[in-house]
Every structure is written in structure tokens, then in C-alpha cells.
Image 1 (cartoon, one colour):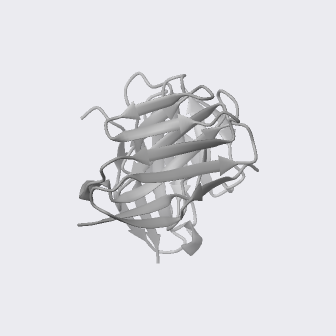
Image 2: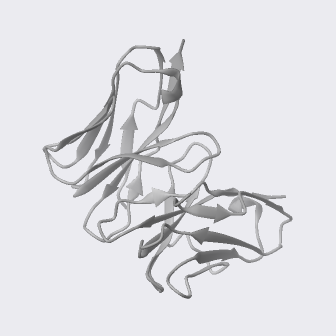
Length: 111
Length: 112
């Protein structure tokens, strides 16, 4: 089946720094979603991407749908302590099919 | 609160017992999904409904698992004869046709 890889697996950054993470696949996807999950809670949708090359922002978060349609990127600017959590990407091969989730990137923000 | 809700939030059961979880989706969302998530992993798709019809089931969904959405609104996920390997977070999500899924808080199952 399809697999998504997320890089890095985990990262420790200083408060105020910018963060970049990515999600890659060997398959072409038509939709990418980015989620954040806090411990003991369900994932919260951050950004949805529907077209190759699309760049979408949500506050300090910016995500891009890769031109090859096999990857997506999430950037967080000026990190704050509440950015701590696990960030998941999810891809959909074809409209109407279920989403495949990556293993997540665990972000820790040091004060 | 108009988000996806799940009950119970936590369930501890003994091996061999049956458990049932409930999910109430966002109203007007015609699609409802069930996922399982184990520690350190992303959610894994189990099954989904469009209205009351169950349209897809993962091979992760063994015969001991059954899901229903009888009136196209709330859904239940039942696990019969629970095993320790069933311990996980069970997540429900809903969406309209556009497929941008919104998750509930999950039900954490612990099988002793």
C-alpha cells in the first residue's frame, strides 16, 4: 500500500525559531492535509492543499503542495511553546478514497 | 460545541469482553471515518460511511470489529472478544464530500 514518510522524525528548537518539515511519497497524491496532535487528543486540521504548487497559510503556518505531487512541506514561523506536538501529513490518492497518514514529526520548543 | 464528539473518552476492559464506542459527527457532514492509532504512529484507516452506507473497510478491520451508522448521523464501533493488541486510540472523523476531515478527541482503549 501507499506509504508516507515524514522528516524529521523529531526536532528540538528554540522559541522564536522557524521550523520546516516535509512529507514524501512514492505515489502521486491529489490532496494533502496537515494536522497537529496534542497528547491524548485527536488531530486538529491545520491546512488543506488541493492543487500542485499551491501555497496556503494559516497564521504562522505555511504549507505547500509539491509540484511533483509526491511531497508537501509545512513551515512554522517564530515558534512558540504551544506549537509543541506531533505534526502529521495525510495524503489522498484519488478523490473519495481514504487518506493515508505519515508517522508524524514530533516538535519540541525550548524556552 | 459543534465539533466531532466521541464517547467514552477512555475505556478499560478485560480481555475477552466486548466494547462499543460512539461517534457523533459534525452535523451536515455526510462522511464518517474510523481510524485506529497506536503510540508513535499516525492514524490508520479502518472504515468509512457515506450517509448510512459503509463504503470501504480496511483489512485491519477483523471479523471481531463491526461499525454501524444506522440513520446516517452517529456511528458506533464495536469490538467483540477484545484482545490486548486492540489497545489503541480509536479516532472518528467526519467530512462533507470535499474530504477535508475533522477529527474527534478519540476513545483510548486499554485491554488488560
